[in-house]
Image 1 (cartoon, helix red, strand yellow):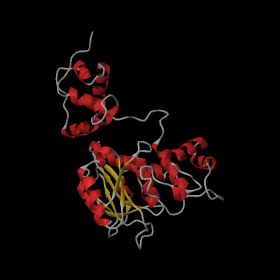
Image 2 (image 1 turned 60 degrees about the vertical axis):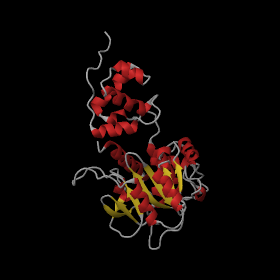
Image 3 (image 1 turned 90 degrees about the horizontal axis):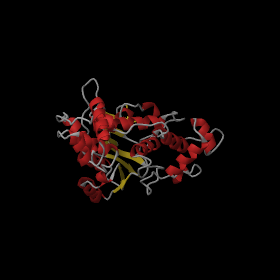
Image 4 (image 1 turned 90 degrees about the vertical axis):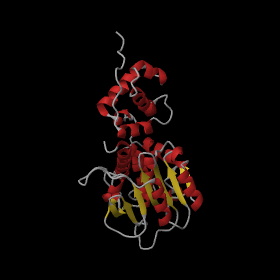
Length: 333
């Protein structure tokens, strides 16, 4: 017998609808945009067959993703890690270890020596170096992909914004502020103010988890959700406009470099007006490495740990950043 027609609309909460509309933007021929569009279309009461016809897909595909949504909610529509897929932590750990440490008795890492240190093959290390345009013998020449005109030697992390629509990383070139041992000042977060710390201060909870200790004065603006806690649900991060204003107030001199997670963010009127008014540069992060990886490397390089890096500094930075923006997107689910 054929599949029965859907008799009633799927119930979608306002929070889910907001996340689904966000996910459905883009190419709906496959992936997350198609899955979100399936749920939104079927929620109007259409049958599986009519939903499939409107979205140019098949009834089994519609049934699969409606079932997944019913069982797991919006997170069930996201891409999942598959066997053999490149772990996000590898790139950041390799880049940070290459640039922030030296091999025992040597000046620069070889792919074989670093592979032994991190438990990777020398071929994997070499491929990661090529992907990031990294030459271990010339660390000062390293440029963050997406920001080719900014050398990270002496650069400062100025701001990090993460919400359900936009993810932005802001850096500045120039000497470290006077009186700052790490080259970074205090961090303003939704839960208070602290100093962006080294590896020992990083956890997988959220971006703001890398803050530790009270401080005062201008510094890095971190606008990201912190997740639910004893005080209740996560607080909303400042608006994009407020974030950019805080960044501009904190660094009135010199050109800032903003790296956006996508063209949509880079083209927002508030971003373009901000860049034109202050003479700052806005660029879009490449697909590989991801924006999350780029942000983790920038944080790891501009806030070097004292002494030897923790083995998984890059991995913990990536996990904290990913948790923050997933919390922002899914409302803490």
